[in-house]
Length: 382
Image 1 (tube, rainbow, N blue to C red):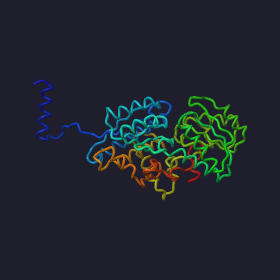
Image 2: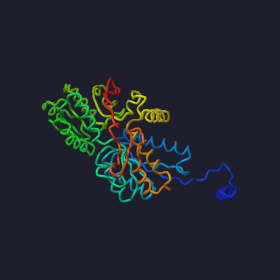
Image 3: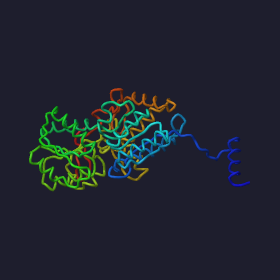
Image 4: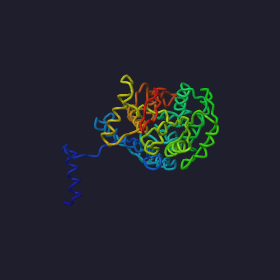
């Protein structure tokens, strides 16, 4: 008997007799994901990809969801909206994913929102732009804190510390534009005057000219809104120009990669960040401390490297999607409906209370204010 015929015979006998020790392919439930695993935003997408892979293993080791094993189908957008759209198309039509996690960045997310809405597939983004969930889209949710919440947290801190005027420097992309818009709306409401506003390109290598103009307007502080590498260059330019007023950054730099890029120039920078950066400094009574420490420990044990707030966004997305899957028969409409009903989920990024009117669901406990001191995150305000 030829080898192929022998193999078919063995498999047929095994299927009829239930012989143990022969593994058959199992039907899996596919969860799609789109992250910027490579490219300039890889510091966001790499921990997100690893987090999903780790959590899928954990769920499957515990028996899966409703008796079905999960399979992660992860595509790399490289931070390119066109590639994110292509990946979404594959997840919908080829892979038949029941839900999608990601993308990592705002512009990629906004690019695939129409496809999620058209296909009727639950999408839980890991990006921050408020436009992702405001206005509400039926099938779209997000786990990252909004830029509106970040700006409010910064202004609350400023008011407590007597800062009433700022200069704003934002990156000219979807994340920066969204943050700038929220600052322009929320600063006046907080009694804070914007005396100068400048922008920079995502690939710019020097922001000295913009900072010089901001300095001449005599603000009490500067707020920079962007993601790496631009904010690290701003930190260097601020030091080079001898600017001594406080430099605030957005939550877009809340990762070890920013510390690496900015080096000593990061010292003194203040920003709103998820509690994951200062987990050990949290009070034992903080409801998030145990969740955050557990995630940090599991990630470090598996990958021998630290994770970040951005990995935490993927963690929360996966946890809430799998929670919403239970008892649905993996029906996408039922998963969406269950997502919208999640209340009081304590995650890495905060406490989520989702509803038909709120597809982010995070409140003020999602941020703490931190300061970078000697290359480390220091909790300065809860």
